[in-house]
Length: 386
Image (cartoon, rainbow, N blue to C red; front, side, top):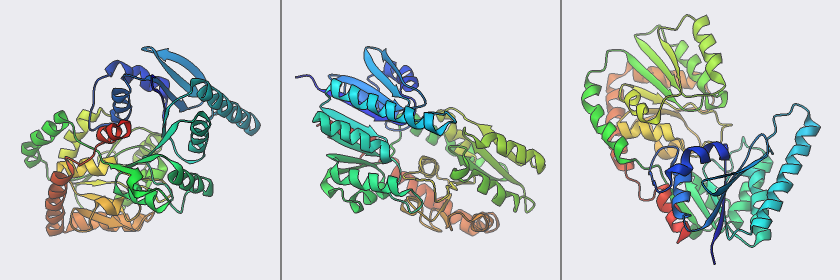
């Protein structure tokens, strides 16, 4: 009997399928494409369907595989229309899934959406595997999300958890320890080569103190907090702040930079190719990951990549960050949601050369240990399929 597999993930299923289905057979250990490519790799002998919840319902076939988007996240301003579209889309998803009759359902969404995915799997008699990429039960999360995630951790056949923090959360919420597979970001050979090539360039770094942010440019990721913290220090010495990423805060930041006449010191670079990120990391004095506590951070890729390169990290003392950053060893931890505390942490590294040297050495040691994790996502998926 041929297996039938559904993978429900975040983002836009059709857009990702067009980009990644032609790359079937690749199995990267790092980078943002590793999730879908690993699932595709181990699903080659199955009838496979990719699905997501987006702004509108669309169904298509790409390279012979079904790709469905369900309009449960409508952007309609009218609340009544939005709710009707949500109900209709969930009903369509349930109906399509039951007709498909999957044997395995891989769920890459969380919260209430994941509850409907679990219910569809249960009604279809399919094995349900939860991919836990983000924090599962932060106090700042809604009760609906916390209840949903606890319910699913207890009932999933397997929980594939992104990093040690999410693993511990899943177990605390009721998942059986033997049913949780932890994975961490690996590093592909081309990116490892890029890191090795950075060493001579780092010696040529100019005398300015370079602060780098990499990630989604959103307020709850703390980009405005970082700008305000930098602004309070910008007169101290030759400082530079670089933002890399895409999101709704790009325009806001650019306007603030212009208004405060900091265009020489602050650069909003926008999105860049993943391969080029390591070159920017190699020129950074410190990477800051200023996520606010309301953001369900489960595993911070930019912090990991900074440590790979040997760059210390300043991060808030909540969620996954204390699992990665040891205060005054490979970086600094600060009080979450506090611009003043973040500013103080930056000031310490800027003004204390001994501390900066110590955390740089600690970051390099951390990076060596983290570069080749015991279980990457592709190995975790191999265990799911075996």
